[in-house]
Image (tube, rainbow, N blue to C red; front, side):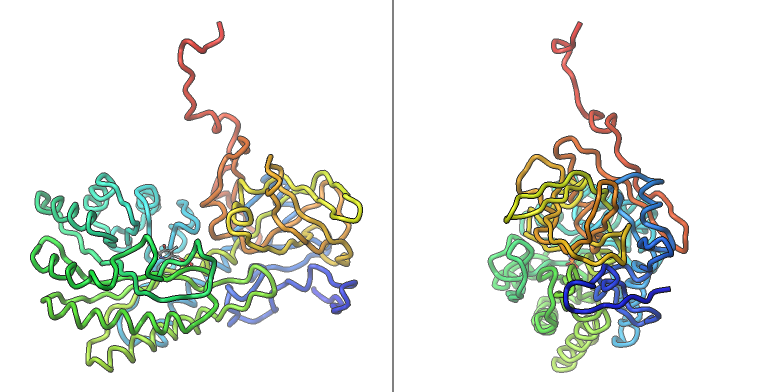
Length: 467
Ligand SMILES: *Cc1c(COP(=O)(O)O)cnc(C)c1O
């Protein structure tokens, strides 16, 4: 089906170069730019999950989030298989649902045997409504409200306690409640990793977690409050990480605390090492595979436990981006174009910072693929501009594209994580629809917002109503 000359002279290159390698079941989704099911059909259109992307846009509208279930399921299975291969103890993979929280995604990953990590009452509610069982849900956050804590206790999910206020609030809450919830403690391990400053969380100057020099007083507090059933500890050191060493170091730092906790009479059983594995946004990104990452975690924990003669804990991790990021492409329709001679060409699309705030927030770099002209040589360089009233609303600064016309469809790969979940209605632009595609079937999982949706929460005081 696919045969196209790909040369490096920059003239004959086409979007084909970004297709995942065919027939490679071992491919790690986070190392592929496009979803694993991506192909090209006879009309020279991109196909994802067996559906022609151009037809999907005709049917469901534009912009459109297209989520490939094969890629997401493969990522879930690779995480689970890597643990069963490399860890002799019990393990659980949690999906960090802040990456993309909605009913269908929570239900799909739960069906794959994953638990869910939530960071707000809203994400907890979504996971519960999707049918996820409370024991499989872990509740994070550095400023959970009293109401959120009460909600968590009522549902019986696990609570990852971040700070003293929360610990004390929870102790009081539990003293008057007949519910018992297991808790974990979030620790700041003091580990540096090379990633964007906003998404680094494990170094000491972080708003998250208990500092290492306070941990013993926390253990002491817990040992005096039997209502607090502390089952484990947790750390998350950052996101979009390409190195393995920080997670190896993390295993060792965290296992040390197991021994310390024992001296306060606490028998910790769970070790949750967070998420953070990176993905490919461009061909320049080179993350380790899911299997290599899990193996590093497992070996680190096994070695650290052996050195201290500790039993193996139940081992947890919480990938978000590497599970769902590579599974989605965002399709846009090309609109107006502008040439600024000698400076830059602009190709405008019908979305932008409202459906993908990452470029304007983190200066994230993406690739664009001409889904309606896959084999056309990439002879043009242009900025892909969003439709919002901000000069900074640029999806890609320098995209290599074929000549495009209004109505052409382009896709941006790698938009499954932190796109829909960070989407807004800036400029009162309705949020896009999302479809789940698999073997030629496309199921709507998020309806496109309507203008009525935009004013649903608006209130017009009586005195402002026009007669
Ligand atoms: C964001 C976050 C994750 C997921 O991070 P990824 O880089 O998307 O894998 C996991 N755990 C916690 C506590 C987080 O805040």
